Length: 386
Image (cartoon, rainbow, N blue to C red; front, side, top):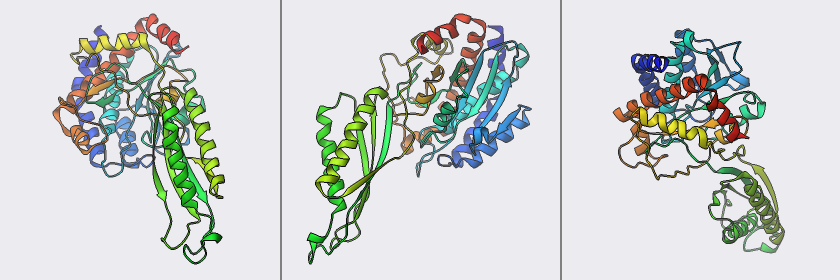
């Protein structure tokens, strides 16, 4: 507990650095995989603190790996994850400016007390969560296969020791036909929009037979050029979600069959291409959730009990199939505010956001310190993971 207090004191003394980082990234929002200013700011801050950091980590242009502590006598490896990409037009409406600052502050507090730490601890920059998340590429590389666990905390409008994410598969559907004059010689045309429209109706009809909780949502990307030309090209993008990736794979097979059938019915052809990396659900971690909840309560971040929050989908789900992964939520608002809105983005510039950055960093550091000193915590993580 003395080490926890010392780290928490360091966090209190260093918190302005995290607030400034949050402000800078908030005021310079960058889309997924284009977070060059954020990346440069993290690299600059870490180097200024004397923290060893590897840039362009795993060949990803805006990723980094900072070494907070290394212990050759320990096989424990812990990753603190930082996100920093924004959304189109509405900026940091998912709160990644604060998420990343929170992780940075936790890492910095631990680094200032590294002489008392055991185990290997890293701060890892993970770009592009909002689109084709890099955690998927990192997971696929195998780098996390020997990690004891990874953790981050996501800002929200509630406090929860864990989050639930849906598995996700996303595809572009391109229909190809043949142009012709829509009035003078329609019989010479093959209408790509008809193929796409029939497919969209097929998806709507399919919903009735799908398991509860399945999500299907999409947009039309291209629907013809002029009303008097039978279109030879049409495209749409659809995203599919479910709480388990195994059943989602069944849904995707049905979707593929529907697309091919609709193309055949309209004498067109269809090309199906993944629009993003497939995302897995976040594996449950009941033993550690209890520990995290206890830390929340001890630090005065009262859990919103009886709240079960299913978010969208996240690339941390893929990572959770490689090692135990934790994604608690911490509140930046005293009233309900939906994420991915301008109202939620504005919350990143409030005093409550500063509270969340400090509390969240202390929660992460407390879990890390306790797991280094109590072997049963990581043993129980492995039980849940397996």
